[in-house]
Length: 206
Image (cartoon, rainbow, N blue to C red):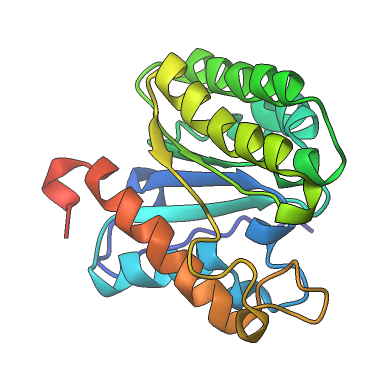
């Protein structure tokens, strides 16, 4: 027997009227090694609820995803959602696997094109990423600059570095030194929130 569930936000508005914020990402977004409520998308939702705003955050993070994988599934992620805002937080695994920077750029650009094809008015926030310095100065600099290039070319908003204040700090990461711990995710949530607020519908901005 199938049961359809309907959520009702704090302000009592029916779920069908709730605006969607979809975050498509990898293990950093999925909250690898943590409980779902500790991942930054859930923490952003908590901030939204605290301000009694009419938004639902959808965590579309899958561990291991590359930009190519994100491109393959973006239509499915957005199917029927009419997302008002999409955060694209992909690319870390491209860098770690040595995917050519040009290919990452093409995939990110194609993801943005697919989002706009789904709904032309969707606002897009592209989250940038850095690579460890031991991968070489030339690669790390070009990799980081790649996100700003895509944001400029595609005229979308840019969050320069998703792991700002978290990356490389042992006390804010799990033992693998790659994935943020609960404290690190809180900082990520604040970073994302500060860049999301200007994109919210003017009547709903806190």
